[in-house]
Image 1 (cartoon, rainbow, N blue to C red):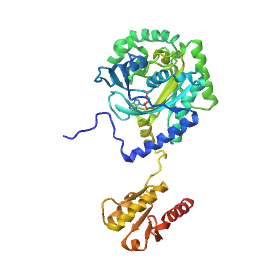
Image 2: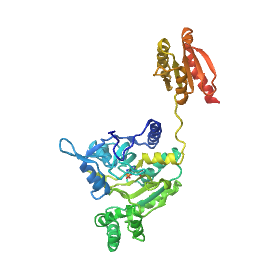
Image 3: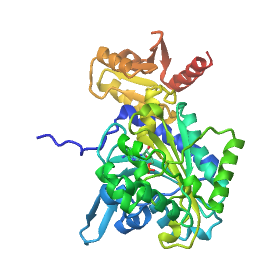
Image 4: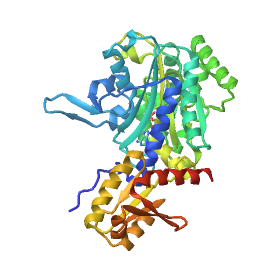
Length: 425
Ligand code: AMP
């Protein structure tokens, strides 16, 4: 029997990896401009980190973690998200000793045992940013601007930013209680999951995707009516900066996110055409997490972008971030001494930084030309016996079919000159 990939995972094939690399390069470039530096943490951590960080009663910790005992009988979990690990690394490596805020970003796979569907996988890729050590609402706004900059530069246009404040340990408990009291009156009508959520973590009900539960949550008390003065002022300042920068957003007082660590600002970026899994990124403030994980009390804010879904939306919206990539030159030969010459030439030509291909299957010239055509090469260099004797090559321009005989020493010069002429046209 064939071994297949595990459910909910994807093979990203060569035709797509070049697109991923372009997005990744863009991410690194934007982070450079915004002053965020990369941090690489382990793919697995002690389970306790996520239990404490994400919250015991979240779906992720309750049902979605890949947790196992290692051979030393330690409980290990494949990271389901990046923030808890970054905060742990920040504390463990005393990054707080450097000027604050620490501005960090990460890129890599995350693992959640979710029910796979379009845009929802068990291994998926996130790019995330964290700023630790400042309560400035300017940073909340930066966390919204940075992913939007990425989306726009990738050519994505059709997305909405939803924003809310979840309050803090001062004001959220009152809201939680009001919500719970309201839900308790009609508890039986909610889905099984939500019935449990109502007693354990009623805000999570607002995150339920079932339309029935969403309808039941209409007309409920809203968090914005319960915010304390500090949270209210903070939220107003965030909104003011967003207005100042002419950013579009939707105030969404029912927006909650999948983690318990959020305080004050939360936001989500949605592509309406993407179907059920339409969030391409989200984030917020988590002023209590550093202390929760064992550091001193430091405010922080961050976001994560789902790269698989970004890729889906770019393909869907025909965004033109992906230029066609093809080899520049294909070297065709006839075996024997001509092949030897091809090997020397390819070795030289690759030093120019261009993508050069050759025949590795000792095929006929016809078959080699067909390959060069299918690979979309711009030039084919043909080395035959006659050319070998003359210490020269034939260079064919694939779009026009025109051919020149060029001395072996002049090949690089010829290619460079003609490439430049073409790009000037
Ligand atoms: P979260 O870490 O849940 O805040 O998610 C941040 C972003 O990661 C989401 O907006 C999605 O784009 C993406 N994401 C989360 N879970 C998955 C998943 N199971 N499959 C694919 N993308 C995901």
